[in-house]
Length: 400
Image 1 (tube, rainbow, N blue to C red):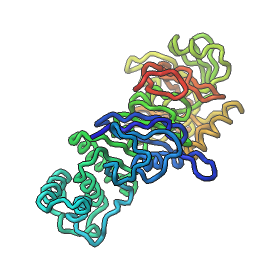
Image 2 (cartoon, one colour):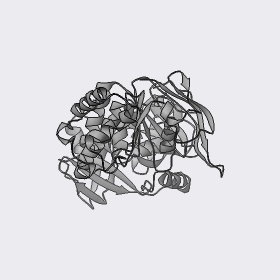
Image 3 (spheres, rainbow, N blue to C red):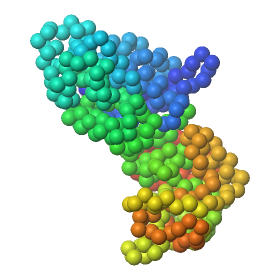
Image 4 (cartoon, rainbow, N blue to C red):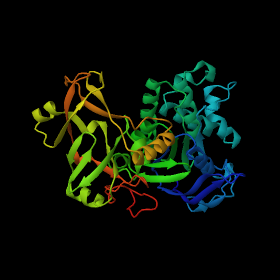
């Protein structure tokens, strides 16, 4: 095993476009690191530079104590698992797993030992004599992982390995990959655009946008302390609500009413003029149910446009309008997040017991402690707890 250190990594193509722009990430020995972001953010390019499939324009790539910028892939001792499995259809499962060992001219006895150990770990024993074409998508992905395991590499690299699987199988494979990584304790870098994979698998998560690192932190800290509008909008499903806001004292004035927030948050946003307030859907509740639970805080009344009852929870949608200063920033954010609408409605997640109905005015409780306030011009989170937010490039913060 080995740590992977990326220092000021740049990948610039012939037209001058920086696919990866000055990214620095330290992956500790044995850590499970996630690279996440929307399409075109540079995450797969960065992974390919680690393994040696892309040249590095500038910066230093270290694996353990070796600088590997100019080393070919075969000399880096890394194992990569691809999205399309990359199995040989004419070979059995056994021989697919054994392939890197055959290339290395490993003795047959050692090959058999390593293949059967990997097969037992991945529950592939009964499939060893089958061909990949006769396996399910999940089984084929396990074969690809087995081939990576037998290499006894310094690190695993995963490039969106679950993208071709259906939703149920993706959940099962997430669990298997997590258990396998913990059992082997091997350094792992995993690329995905799926935030569920990012939040459930990683020890830490690096969020990228247009080739630039936005924040590097644990999944919990990304969720609770997003460093900017992009991270706040990308992490969480349904996404965070963004509303125009002004602050006076400890009161935030929103389109639906006034919300009391903690004094330390209000102090950081004082005198900033028009802001963007960010509140996650799950930080609202039907006011009548909140009162039954003894929750205190701010409430407001608004007309409900649409209600979606899902049994254990209810989503209610409340339309609103934003001024141009806020709309422009949110329009750009929508483009960065591949088109998710963020400007026209408040989405609130309520207990499934709520009897709120479409077309009626409802009283909604909001947890003012969870309100974030963003600068509309820069997207910076003015109320982030920097002691807990991991690393936010360009801002003073401790490492997560």
